[in-house]
Length: 269
Image (cartoon, rainbow, N blue to C red):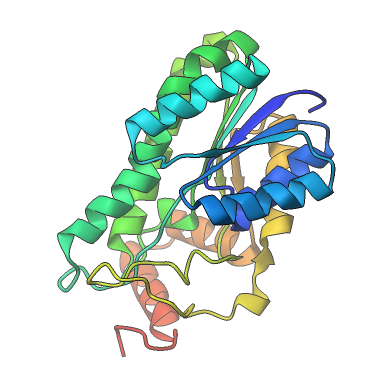
């Protein structure tokens, strides 16, 4: 990673922020993006304290023009792009019969189209460097999760897009990694959208028992340097993917339903 240019969307917190530190400490020049200027600056200050060469760019991945401006700024500053980590994302928690359709549209726009926009604009430069495209997906991209229909749909879409793209780029030696962390301690559940589009606020899960964002970032770093096509993390995540592949769907439906029904304030109770 020495002197490689690594672009990380949604780097104001959580996995994106952790990736900025991990890749930066490995010698990469790190570009961090986010919608919130104050939070992005806080991450920038942290990287400065660690003497990591970086560039903060305020940008909303769900806006095509913001992605174009971001890529142009990166090229003007560093002249190349070696790694694009599509990390920016948002979740939701509500029954489909109750949720406002605008919530699902917003989740799709950020999680799926944000990945499409950033990848589309960075791709010519990643082809030149024979670089890496990372999609930070979720176990919800392998197994649809109840009360998270929009989130699951966005991650299924992301994974299908990146799998198809990986095949297209096979002869151009561009590496595509689909990373699925499983439940990770971050603020994604705190800022998840409720049925009316308002922020959920409190996480419905015990964050202390989850893999940390820093651990996830270390795994992503290794998968990028070793050019793995996929990454599934946590014992629960690996087990879910395995069981969903081999168990009858009616059994798996019951297992997933019963597991998520145990969450505090679950809509299934």
